[in-house]
Length: 80
Image 1: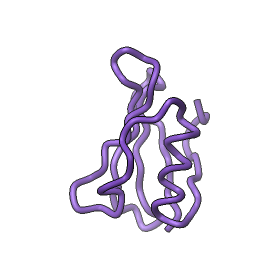
Image 2: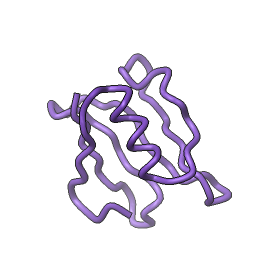
Image 3: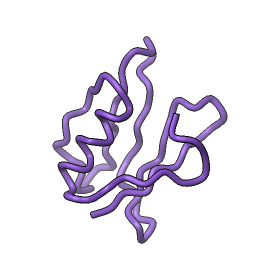
């Protein structure tokens, strides 16, 4: 399943995750201490059970791609 990754807010610290049909899968957020990225799966989505904490945004996206067997595509802004 492919994932659409959309920046949310104006600070560049959160990204919304949806499938190509627009169904919510969760979010990625930079941790409050700013040196890690957290995947917050939508309850009941296919991201349930994915490892949560990652050192980089790319690592978080790779974990999502492995879990869902697809790719992550950025829309509506820059990657980071």
